[in-house]
Length: 426
Image (tube, rainbow, N blue to C red; front, side, top):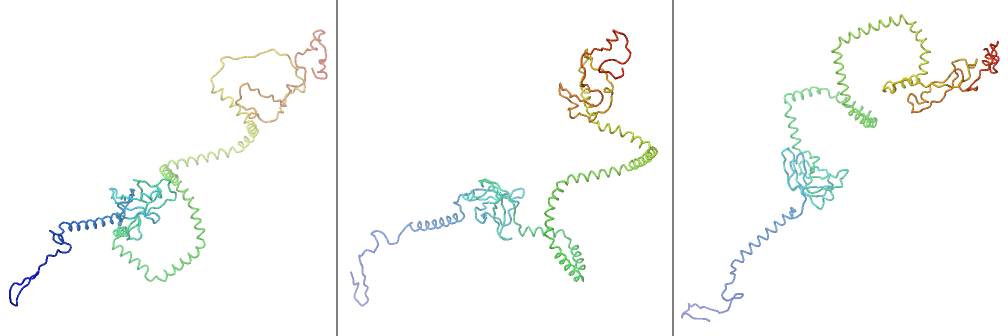
């Protein structure tokens, strides 16, 4: 609808419409969202923060289960930090969770191990703290032992570290300690003396080095033999090392003996003088009676030979007397066994003449002397020493026919008329 407000060239027209805005609704204005937009922005920020935290947690393996193992080391090193890697044969099997300084100066390194890798690691595994470079970050290296244990690494196990890599600060610290002990003035004097010693002697030093090189070239063919001698000398040195306490004791005893000799030198001198005098007297006695001593020794030879031959019998006899000397007397009286026996052959000449012609040594060992078992019966030894106790003859009751004749007829002249004695003196 158009409305004309007045006449004239200047006029204003107003146009009105009753159409409804697109997307609108009766009773509401377009774009008025209230609290929806702030809540949506806050949710977006929270979601981004959650995603970032989840990424960090996943990167740090916070949701991965771990097994705690402790390593005791002399020191942890300068660049040993938490989250350092734990490797075995180049494969990462865990990380360092924390480092604890102990009161005794050592370090307790707590490891978070991958549970899936523990069954591959023996319980006696060796641990080294090493780094790829002198200034590089430290890592825990697990080394498999030559004889791995059948038991596996387990939760809460404590392992002693074997080695910590040398760091540059340790070298500087030791070098500083050495330099602190050196007097600069004396060092200057020493360097000056060395410079003065080498000054003008370059040719001689060069010749010395050349000669030394020639000497090394000369002994080089003998190096294998020298190496073999060194290897062979190891058991010898080991034996000397084992015997070192005894050798030291011997030296100490020798020192004590030497000290005793020095302390008793006057008595030793007197003893030597007395020994010299005794030796002089002995020379006079033995020299003056040399012939008599020689004759005595010659005369004693048969006796000593006889004793040497029958020494076993003497030993048996003395050994048999020992039990009687040590035992309690078993008899309080003397027992006599007497009996009347029949007569035997009387003495006959010359077969019953006594003689010494027995041969053979003592039979102590053969008979088991000097100790014999009960009811032992010694064997009968027949020797050529006179009459034979088992010779043939009339054993038993003998009738003296000559005595009977003399009783009946009186004395008869001449020898007895017994048949066995005809031709023998009566």
